[in-house]
Length: 177
Image (cartoon, rainbow, N blue to C red):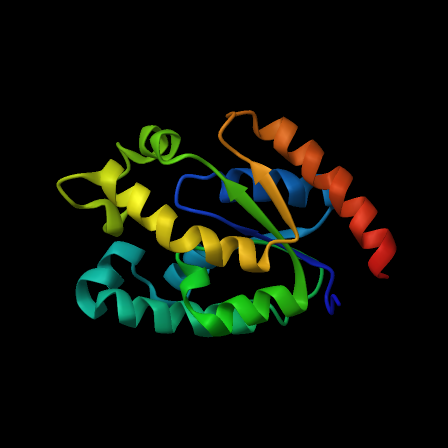
């Protein structure tokens, strides 16, 4: 059951959550939020710096607090960080307070989209494609666990993805209110 009529976008880094989220929010006349951006606004530092200073565990604590607060908002479109689903409380907050869309993108496509982005701390490894493949293996079951809709985001056409999401949202929302 939805509490706030929110739409949450989940998926690995580079899956298009922010791009598609902004487009969805514009089409629906809603406010768009990005949990990583919110964390940066609140702390005054970039996500990679938080990872450097506090490690992934410190970042995940900040992320959980931010998601707990953002899921109390109403009528928003929220793009989560790629690893938000690893925290059980985040999965619960997202699934209980809104409609969750998983943007499923193959690791090779994610690699092409993210390989020149220095703002991805988990990809600062010798084999970023291997790391993306590993992350997908670990997180895909968690994404699927809470997803109300799974969208193939690997085709690269954000407009088509938005149209599909809106079509499904309208059907789902009509039955849940």
